[in-house]
Image (cartoon, rainbow over all chains, first blue to last red; front, side, top):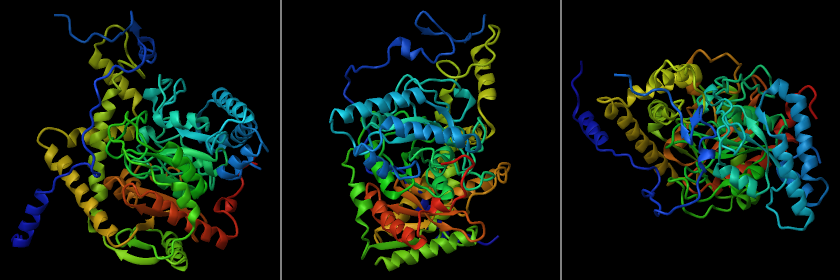
Length: 65
Length: 499
């Protein structure tokens, strides 16, 4: 196997220093903590495979021990 | 006026009261009834909702209300965008029958503009694919040749345009899913700058790459639609809070004298069909005749774009698709009271996801696993930076970049469905645009001599300079149509029963 050249080491060092941010200059977005209109409980449950008393009904999560 | 007219012609006819929105909508449903059994562009038709929307537009117009330029013009919506109360499947069994309780921002904007939503179009499952063969509901057929693919993932949208079932359509583009279908069907499609059109209500595949955009039969129609759906949306955390450039004015300008157009050296040669290269070169010659200056640019890191994309996109998909857990919405399988949640979740995913989706979830989960994250996902993100740097350097030498959109014309249904790598290579020229978050357009530039099928010409513009694609695209389209004597879709064989 050929020896690794100085240029290859330099190139690897350069690649190791590349960092990726968002491709465009945008900042992290947080909105004001305001209460805004959202889905009603009925709407939120409208696609649920099963629901009961205004809640999602799911299969048993913990085993019986 | 006929359904073969462009959206802008339909809009003018509506405005002059030569036709009502209800009549125009019904004419499109007649065409769908006549040809969609062969094309299979649509998964769902919302005739009742569309006609109610059309009546409303007609009423407003009769009352003399000021309406948006596209009010009353019909549109086909890719089945990955939520529309309240209308089934949204993403081409997957796991969402069969799901009716979203909310409108995506794109749909809200279309409704506000009075654009009539005809129905939902077919797609590769969760937008993963380049042929629409990965749809759980069967493939869509290319109107140019029903034995061929209409591109993907947005093959339903592109086919609906080429079959005159709709004059406008919405697509989404993660690695080429708007542009490659446009290329192989002889239609126009634009991937806007990332953040230019809201992703709210777009069922996510790869969130840092996904972008909704406009599709139509002409550059001007695409610009009109782009202008309706674009703009800042506080509901999308990566939405860009900047004014949208005047895209319609750019599409109408038809003057590109003195513009510098860069041809990307790496997006040609091996793997590109001869007829594709010939039509691309002829279109570049047209740009020269129009007064543009051509410069060759080199983007050496594009070589790694495909490999990096197939780490980033599956990684993000494996995270995004974890929400299909059978608990809150969508399919649930095997819940007979004896099985626990984890087993039900497994059974549901086994039954609900198709092969390609499972392949990408497994790839992504592996790439993100502890100890591999930096080596795979981290390295891929570095490649992404290098690609962006290539674009930045190229754009110092020219105003836009051009290349063929796809390396080949439409291939046969079934030809590549068992060879994922061959399928992935279709997106070699479109993926760099998504990786850098910039804008990309595909418009038809002729028929390849080997097979008489349409070839796509890609125009790439810097971020938030989407108007440049429309400027160059509009001028090139006008020059090519005057050379051909008629629009490219007039060369396509007529479908049985079609108007």
